[in-house]
Image (cartoon, rainbow, N blue to C red):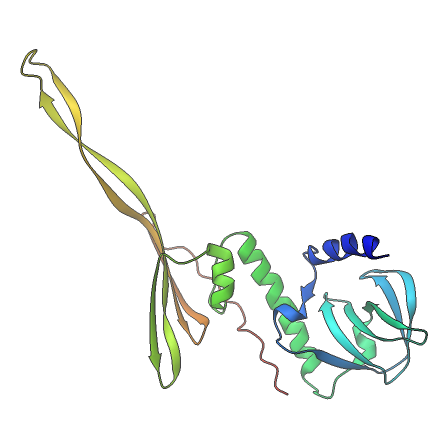
Length: 221
């Protein structure tokens, strides 16, 4: 069974519609089953894996817009599978709404990273996943926390020539005199406490459009 489980996990990890909680929340997230809940093998239903009784405590592992992947003790054994979010509950009345906000935000972030773009509200980790390591960094420490900026600079070599007269033939020809490196474009991401607050683009063709996305969701326990 272990051999068949590995490919299934790989497909799940690569699913663009799924947000994985362990990548965004640094502690386990537990919910309660409000009503008897059928557990399915796939996010869209399919094969039934069992049933969770009411008041069963489950751990939330991943989510789509319409389904949650959880693990817990079903009526017959421990099971990991997909359930209907409407049949789950949390002690925090805002928790489910925050999860929906988290999901929508991460879908936007995935799109930005796929297109190698950044936006106000992204974390520095997300910026690095999108654009790579910055060319230049500046960090300031204060009582209010940490702030600074990351610069991404694209440069290109410019070859410079001079006209030289051949003393023997009198013919003129071009000779490479020197090479300079000139800045072609620059993206500056200013941040406060790890979240981008300002994006500035400097290019030969003028500034681009800056998107604004929701800030990371903070869960209070």
